Image (cartoon, rainbow, N blue to C red; front, side):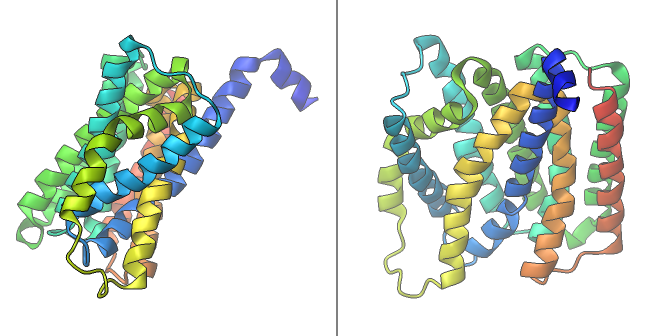
Length: 298
């Protein structure tokens, strides 16, 4: 009976699939900042950025060749370049630099700003028009995050916070541009072509910036490099871009408000970082905001 209802309303089935794909993407992305935090303890942040892009780019090349994907049109190259600058280079590099100054638990709270950034770019680049109440919930969640960051005072790093804010803007633009392009090019194809577009630059930089010796690198650092390369840079985007294209950039983008909760859990369990009551309070409150934003997204 339920299946018959979905067949009669394919739009509902598509939207539900979008939220499911988006949720899987958020789960995968939640491990990115804790893994990056561990990796930059032993790898240079710039090397980590180009190395993860190179590894993911080689895998993307194999996928595109295996499935004999047609090349993007000339009109699609500029949006692909924006995606590459936002999520292949900008966000990974800026967060890796920021994590030299702040803990992953502190940086994860900034992810609460990402849904608002994604929604704004979804309006500017994707042509979406959420209802006014949607913006109330989205802005409220963002203000809570900013207020928490400011309340940390001298215990936090202003430079680290600025780098995280720049990373959020770059990522929001890359998400919105990629989701818009996914409607015509396909979800996994977008991130694969963006990675391939970056590959001619990333591979030489990886070789040039590689540490003189790898003998002192621990297993945990290699595992973290593998995670951010395969899952954060490629697999997560397969689900994420498909979810944004199916369910709407602004609407599904609000799922990112759940990411701090998952990320803080990982930071506390894997990195043994202190998660303060204030962090938990902010996280729970922005999770409540996602429910309101979802209701009024369209």
